[in-house]
Length: 138
Image (cartoon, rainbow, N blue to C red):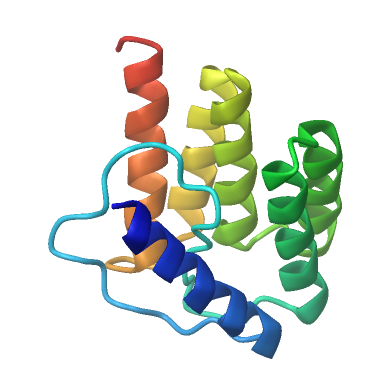
């Protein structure tokens, strides 16, 4: 699973550098487990170069243990891309890692509401919600 996540991170990083995200079909069974750092789901439309750069920066900050900076970076990304599920997904994943499970669930629900039906973004949002609920023992 770790290898799959690393491969996905590499593919996403290359895609983000190009500034385009293409819609993909959701897998038959979405990837499970928490620790989705680096999972930037496709959302059916392009993420702006500024939004993509901010998501990448927040991921670097998270890997370096700088969660406060990563949060601030994602808040900036939200001001640029408030209707893109990838930003909400990333912020929700960060909240999950911080132990703020209720907020992580809310962010997952927002990402889900913005995700195209049958997209990878929808699968990731559903997984974030499930992880947050499991952490809250619901």
